[in-house]
Length: 129
Image 1: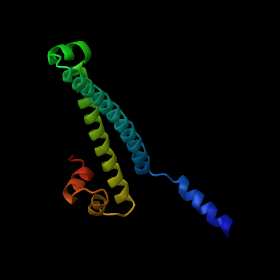
Image 2: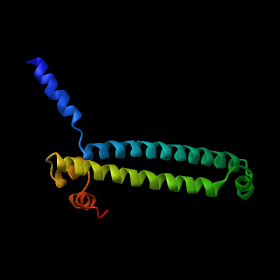
Image 3: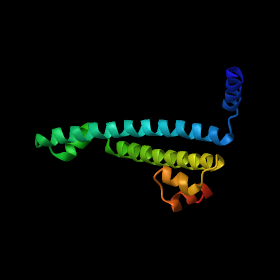
Image 4: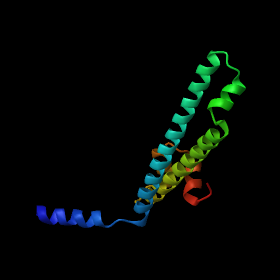
């Protein structure tokens, strides 16, 4: 009996739906995007720390920035990482709502479980967001 139960369990685990694959890939992308965002934030923190220390010595800010920090590229990197993270998070939420609905949950319930409004969950599910 245990053998049969185990075989059924193994068969179910091998039946992966496309929605499950999409959730897996979206989660992987969100993880990478979050790591990129953390790295961009760490760079920003380091730069602001440098500015704080150098301006504490009464150094002119213009000289400090020209000599030590590439602010525009850092700002662009932070903005890009933030946008990538937001995009990946949205795609993961959309994928999870789709999978949940495929597995019998309502869009409203999936929204509640994810901490989203019913309206936003519905927009994600219908592709309007």
